[in-house]
Length: 333
Image (cartoon, rainbow, N blue to C red; front, side, top):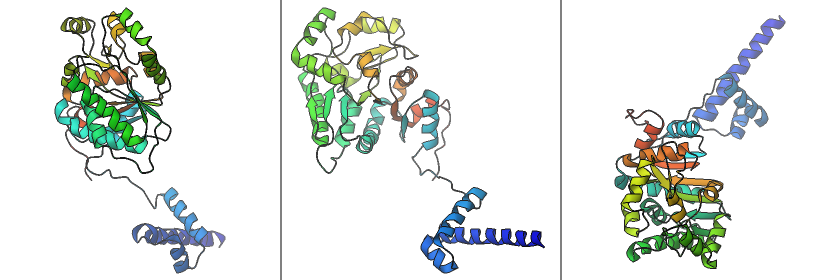
């Protein structure tokens, strides 16, 4: 008799649980109203909904909308030990993906920058310029402390205007104090570099690099971008040939690395006026924005070598990073 009563009670619990689950999840009825309709307490409604999920009566699934690649992002993040990955629904060569990458980066910055952040930015990137131009100001005025230029930039005046606009616009949007590096990006050698870094105006910028909380950079390939080439901040053809012979595939802030992301030990590093690799790697959050088929080797090397912990890239590069370059289907809504 006792066993029959227990079974009946169990069946009734399951029936009530299912009824409540349907009212809540399918009909959108709120818990207080369910309690009123069924003449039970709201606490019991909540408890039975929780139990329904545990028993599998209610199963929650997430269906990504078209153009969102959450599974692919998580796979890449796990494979390369990244904090976060943003995959943008665009493919092709570097120039063709810049607008989409810029727009995605703008949204990322708008939603993740925190009050009090000190941001360093590489000013010689068409993608970062597109990102800043796409950003919207946040209500409430100032929330960043500083926006700091990560490398020197005195070069062609017309191109310098773009780099200055990038820094100025970002500072305007965030209320930050812009900190410009008024020095060349490249010099003749270590002696010249050390003399320039000894200038108080330049050394104060170098000191600001050590206090950054976030850095946002592009990833360069061995072949410099059109913007960087026009700036004058590039190595000569002979220097590039030397880098190629050493196995260089890409750079961040003109510090070149091989296909495994290992920094190349060369005297060319002594000619760069910009954030040093050690100081850069100490920045708590390092965001890289890069895409296009031509840059795949450089992007892969950068994530392998731990140069970045957040990557914003295009769908084609993302699939190759995940080891599935032939997968062409898109996630359905």
